[in-house]
Length: 188
Image (cartoon, rainbow, N blue to C red; front, top):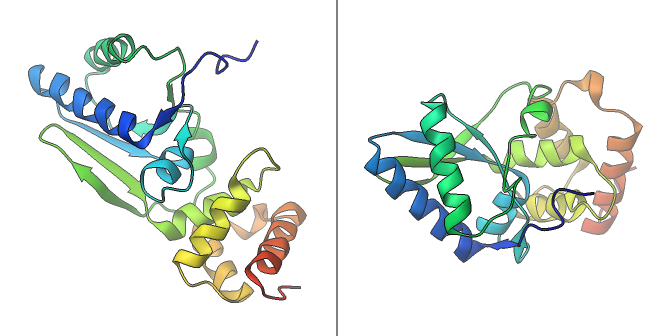
């Protein structure tokens, strides 16, 4: 059974309410937290690329984890969220990234939400190059448009800044080729 089957979708408004609520609980407990969001969470909140996400792909800063677990459990209960609403599986792919370039998305009194810069996010989408129903291709298309990427060389330069060349294989190169075609370029 897929653990995500019973998770309600989180649209931008609900995500903002959840982060507002988290900040208040952190404030009550005199706790500071930094969270970096990735994947669908970013595309939902920042790029308005999809109406909702099923979870919050994130990494937490070092903190009082026992207290944070209680706050996350309280948040889950308050918003009627299911198990798995917080997804830290992104930690594994991040091990392949050469560097992280993060910037602040939103700063509350006790919660700071960070996101990778668009270039890093694009490199991560190319690295993942997952087939549908994953939205890596659509996301990469949007990021290329946003970053004015119009040549294969520009894209490869960005990717090589974040991803070791040794792990870019045929799957990623095909992804790049078809991305170029969809953007209207011949990236053979």
